[in-house]
Length: 431
Image (cartoon, rainbow, N blue to C red; front, top):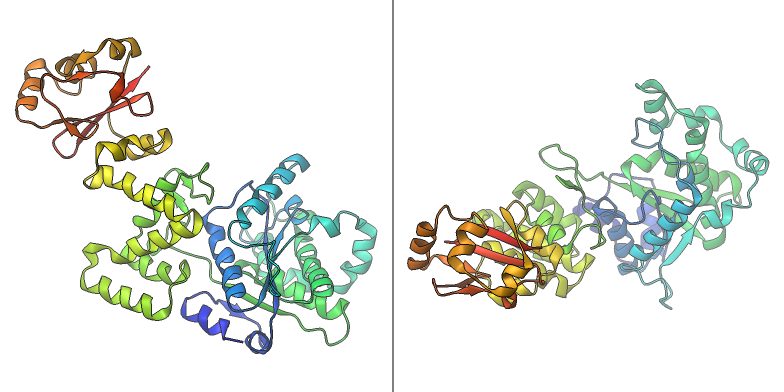
């Protein structure tokens, strides 16, 4: 087997690793799992690293299991949290589980017939019939309270501010640990991976495997660092909130812009973490970037790779065209191809005015549009001067004083883009 640990290490994707893990991964195809808790009906870019880890595993000939936590999601993971999570009702959980399965299926082919084909499981399937008494007898007695209290996620909650930790959350590590035992027993799963805040929960699982399965049972653990930004702000959020992997929650254009606006320092780190480019290609890109950082070659390549991976090549091309409308030489045709959401996002913050549909249907001369109907320009005289200077464009096409605005000029049957010079925009919304 090729050395996946070495691959992940140079990419900065290894934080903690249990002794023997690398040797096991070199020896044979190893079944490995990562869990996803259904706190929402989609996943945001904070979940990209575990998804990418599963893809790396498959590429290196190992068998990945994606576990959706239908059972653990009913409790909430206390790791990295200062307060108790709100419990979700069953209907919301079912919706969330289905949503996460759908997202994961875009990156991993769970219908593949390959020997190392990915598997998708839900821990609710084996926890739903487990009675409380059976659980405390079969699982609870294997791990001491002292062992559980020593975990960092527990110590922080008990010694920190807030209301401490409920018994419900205290049991989370036992349930996650039991998942590892179950997958070890039924799928011969030998390795669990996750974020560095999961180390305590994962090692509880390795301990349960050793104590509940046959003597000498092997189980391993590996975690990746939590992704940070160079300026110390939280990764994965923009001013508008989380950046999601679903286009109906975060448009492709916003997703594209998020990565394009990555700082130089972060781009150098993220190109290794979030793409599958090999070391030679990445080293060459970094060297090129150091010579001419203003060209932003790292950010562009990172953005292209990720937009294609999460969405599609076609979506990437649309996002590039949308970006060029503000920052490049876009055409009227490019503008008309924008859907309503992307149009509004591209021109977010641009002044707007409403104009009655019947006015447009009757046709309005451009001077009236520029002044009286929109307030874009302050007077008819200023409008005429701007038109004479050939500095006015409607939907990216230059117009003269003879131009009459009509319904044929509408974008998505509701917008008109006015422009003076290169950077002065105004949006008309038809009502």
